[in-house]
Amino acid sequence: MKEFRLYAITGEEFHQGRDLIEVMEAAIVGGVDIFQLRDKNSSKKVVFEKAKRLKELAQKYSVPFIVNDHIDIALAVDADGIHLGQDDLPLQEARKIFGQNKIIGISTHEIAEAREAELNGADYIGVGPIFPTKSKVDVVDPVTTKYIEEVVKEITIPFVAIGGIKLHNVDQVLAAGATRICAISEIVGNEDITKTCQEFIKKIEARR
Ligand code: TZP
Ligand code: MG
Image 1 (tube, helix red, strand yellow):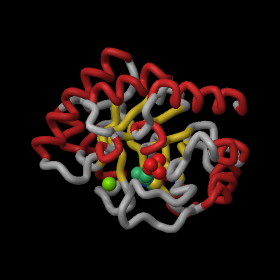
Image 2 (cartoon, protein in one colour):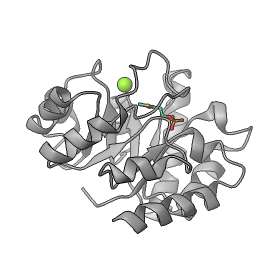
Image 3 (cartoon, protein in one colour):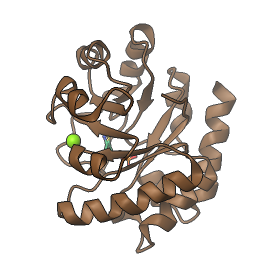
């Protein structure tokens, strides 16, 4: 998959009433180079409608668009990828349905899961939650930057650090060896989304 640095995920509870497209567009303008629709509350029909609009946005800026959980919706809107958790459809089955040329990302919380995802052909893994987060229910305990260090040593596919990452603590994450950062609330919950993303990019670039 194409290299990326800053990955934004929708979190409409943080959008402060702003339009979904407006929020994600501000993030892309600020430097987000891959983004995901994550909606655990809406009907499939509503998620599909959002995905369709976000796919258009992705095309306008030529950035990959990922759908969380719903492989059928990802196929229906011709999304660039899907993101799956440990309790979703197994990676190899998802690959059969979704195809070789699409992006499949897998959430991991420990090195055994990272190894398995790599072995089974994931395009990237999520590594987290690094810090406590309020953006995910039934989340596992923070894995801390220790887990990043383990992944850096062993895993060769791209990984993105996620979970409680803010401008004020991202340096710790980068110092542990992460080169790609993912955030929900710090990006989409911000008054100035574009500026926040620009600052993330500056910090990521400074460490690369
Ligand atoms: N997976 C692990 S932590 C998390 C997800 C989806 C939530 C990240 O949100 P935030 O607001 O950046 O902590
Ligand atoms: Mg899932």
